[in-house]
Image 1: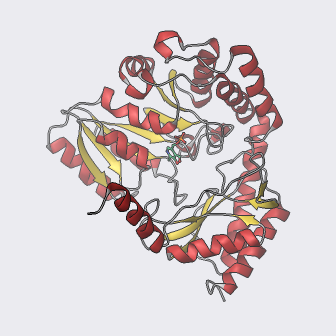
Image 2: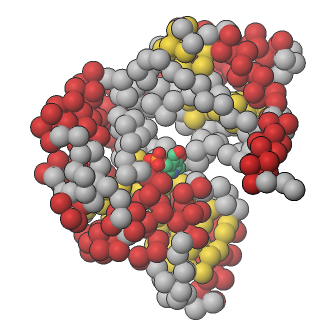
Image 3: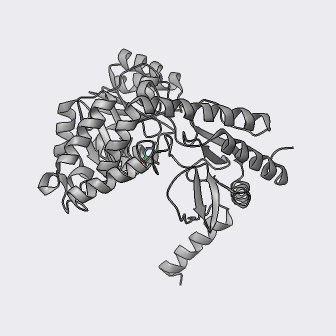
Length: 396
Ligand SMILES: Cc1ncc(COP(=O)(O)O)c(C=O)c1O
């Protein structure tokens, strides 16, 4: 008889046989452009550390100071005895930065996306969701009773067809949900066109800006600022450009935030953000919103452009765009793994992405640029890719 544990072992063996195992590599240093792995200093080209603030001394010290002032944490959810002054300060700071009336904080953007739909939309409503949306949006939609519609990634004809259908089905309220920048491809959502369709069909727009907040658009306000439009709800994270610690948020109108604070389950039933995370995030917002943020954003996009041009010239198949997420397409999962392993030997830390985080047959190495990278480091990484790519038959 097959026991439970036999079944788990067989499933793991099957994942491994398909080349889909995702090992955890242990890092022995602070996050940054150079990290230490297995006693070796290597260039890191796969963090979401877009502005290079995750290891920034000011951001680290702000977290330490907040922890000294407020302790390790609240030992409570927000509405019991878990709301500190620093939580209110962070809510105000992110709302002001992103141009919204108010904010609700969560332990992670995963929770923000998990908590946004169910309290605001019921069975009479419709959610129209991009097919490439992040897993946490998909899970959040599943938890909600609203009728579900899906449109092919950034396909505006399909979005319009789904909006028409939702209206024909008699939806009360319709919300379009999309990533602002799609995390596996670096594609930016067509928010100007989405805005126009939302106006025509009287729909709301929710944008997950985890891969845009802090560095896209004017002052890094995000993908909607980049596209020059307004949206109704933004969900985001402090775990990427804004310091890289952790923690999520939803920015919206004051009444929406007020209702979410009464009903959003990941908010009501989970501990308040730690003071250290709040302190670091506040400092990261201060830097991102100012002139230094402008300089970091300029460097980030200059780095992305240099890397894209050199890798394209070398013959690699990149997904097009300008975003600092730059996927090197390889197709085969095992090849992506072998390539990442060889790159590590060559002193570059990158990771192969395969199913289920990307579709089967679309394995890749997702490289990501940071403002903290130098041109010299970028050139070294391109040289390493050329060596590994030739050895493995990816380029000539
Ligand atoms: C588009 C998108 N949404 C949400 C999340 C979740 O963010 P967090 O790490 O804050 O839970 C991620 C992180 O991978 C993401 O890429």
